[in-house]
Image 1 (tube, helix red, strand yellow):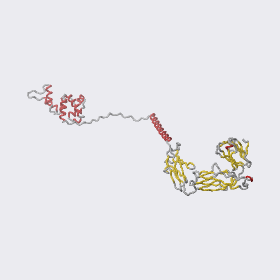
Image 2 (image 1 turned 60 degrees about the vertical axis):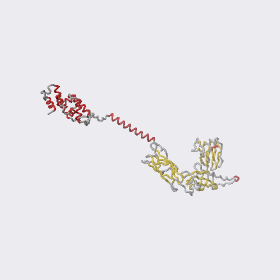
Image 3 (image 1 turned 120 degrees about the horizontal axis):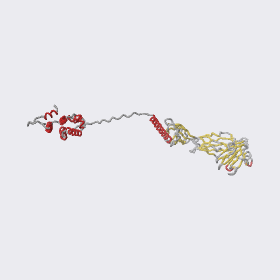
Image 4 (image 1 turned 180 degrees about the vertical axis):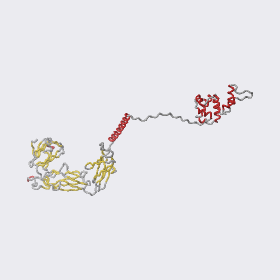
Length: 471
């Protein structure tokens, strides 16, 4: 039996005084209220809706409350609702719609619930359906723009790399020796330098006698064997980038020392002149090699005339005078152990000579050697030296222009030494007679005129030098 039937049956109940309830509308409402007084809230709501004669869907349209929430109220399933606030709101609106007292309905809900909070139901709001994104569309313009962007980016990266390469010098490190100075044993004759740089770098090592080069391998490693001699050996190591030409920011200086034996004397050799050589002019170069020596001193002593020549004697006898010995020449020993007289050859006159070379060391030790040479002049051998300032000269050898000087002549700076040889004569035109000195067949004549005065001198032994008007 439904609540609605109970309400109808209650409405027809006969009062004790014999009158039937519900004989009027107001009386009927009071009778219904008294009949539903014992109903639970869900039953009261259901009975009120039945009495109103509407179904849940009509109530949903009228109250704007979902039918499933209205059904939950009528069934007492408050957990289906969204919490106490929503429950009270729904009850208040639904009670007003059904003609019930909202405050009484809320009060009965609280009593029946016993003060326990209704569990909140989390409502997941559905997300709106997003319109699918359109797929990528590659038009010719998009493709061209993408390619141009890639090309420009690649060029930018390439230019950046090139700028960095050209701006940055190559690195350089020497790993052997690890220190800038190194001392080897007395018997050491070579050492291998090693280090690192950029791949393909050109490694230059400046050493005594020149510069040597090698290349770093693909990992940047490099090695170079070098010769060492007794004493101090200096090596300047540099690296060059073959693509940019840039040198290392800080070249490395390496000093390797090979100690001398304390009792070791200098050793040396004379490469020229050879012992017993006969020369046709007196400008004799002297050279050789030495070790444990810092300088070589060269002296010459007259031994006598060559075969067939008159012996020197007093001036009153008419015989040629005994030639004076030339001044001693001292030359340094190079880092490579070589020494020579260079542009200052030993000047000797006709005769037999003893040439003595003496090597001296820093420890005060010395060693000497003597060789013998002969000078037998043939023709004219003239040495022209420019001293005290530049001088212009023009030279004829046996009556012809000397090709080394030229038809117009040449101006030579102070310190220049020139040698001319002829069969019969050598003629020299000088723009400054006082700055031009002469040595004829080993005989020093000095300057024959005054500085700044142009003169022409003819040398045709055995006659004395003579002034001419040749220009």
